[in-house]
Amino acid sequence: MSRILVLDGHSSAALAFVRSLGKVGHWVVVASAAGTFAAATKSRYCKVAGSYPNPVEGVEPFIDSVLNLVNTFEIDLVIPITDSTVWPLSQAVELSSLVRLAVPTREIVELVSDKYRTVTLAQSLGVPVPQTLLVKTLDELGEVSDWDYPIVIKDRYSINWKDGKGVSGGVLFAYDCVDLHSKVEARLVKVNEVLLQSFSPGEGVGFSCFSSDGKMFLPFQWRRLREKDPRGSGSSARMSVQLDEDIERHSRALILNAGFQGIAMVEFKRNRHNGALTLMEINGRPWGSMQLPIHAGINYPQYLVEWFLNSTLPPETVAYRQNITCRWLTADFVHLENLWEGQPKGWPESYPNFWVNLFKVLLPWHPGLRYDHLSFDDPKPGILDIINWFLSRLGSRSK
Image (cartoon, rainbow, N blue to C red; front, top):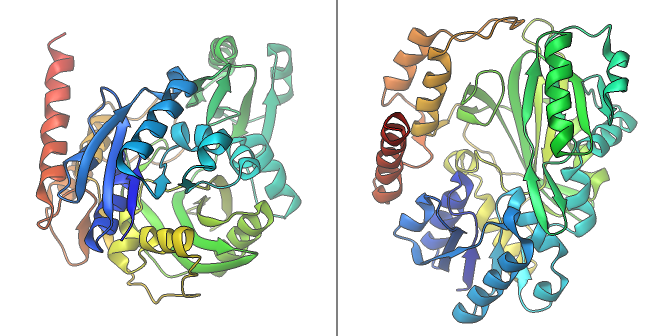
């Protein structure tokens, strides 16, 4: 078996990778940015826990640290999980000559990191997208004077990289023209340009697959049940569902025309009233809900490693289990925190009820329910994740 280095040990996807690869005998090193709580390093399948300088504070020290880990532990494959490590490794030509890197090509990483180019590609393929405007100056805000509120404000890039450092992007909502002007002005101080998009109401739905040489394998679909931030964020609970023909068709067009190699995910919003789809984002890297397809029967981490190390292609399809629910318990706690604050003024659609969702979160089991972190086979990551969450809340209240 191989020696594998998994980065971003704080992420849910990293834990899913570590458990999946460790169970089949790979020797796994887990590393994370210094000073972060990394549940994946607590797994019984983590042989060594390491750290590296935060890449957004300096790419060069990060690359040097990864290179040291590779040399020290004779690593065969490096798997970055989040945008903060995928982009630097996609640029690290010197490192790629020494060890296999589980990253898309530099061109693909730059494409999917650029939300404006993603929208442009989708439009050219007939994939429905929100109304979008790229803004570089406040003078351009007049072009959205006839848009409905709220208006979504996003950085053009997932992380804005400049001079070897990064500024993490985010999502804001403007509820009137004064709010829009203020938030865009503040954001343009930090980055050169932002995207404005029309608000897309509805339920979050996701599609994932494996692709290689213009072919798509292992299609999988899910819908979001709860999100950490009900206005839009990563999911805290989601369910595997039957493949939808339109979602599969749009996703196939995007993934194959972008030239993806390996695993990828496409996220849409589905309007609850008319069923219309709207593209939200594309991820050419492991995504937060990675544990769900594993529970449902598609083990993307193992297929990805076999492809990178042995050029072995996965089966075209796997009959995965539907109606499997997977939840991240501490993310569900964050969901409740956000609900407790109440519906934002000016929110245009129905907002989840706190008490209804409190009951759902407190229900520990029902048929088909699984967990991201909690596991009888590997209990420490889930238990310590809960403890860390409560300690972080106590610490913030004591300040």
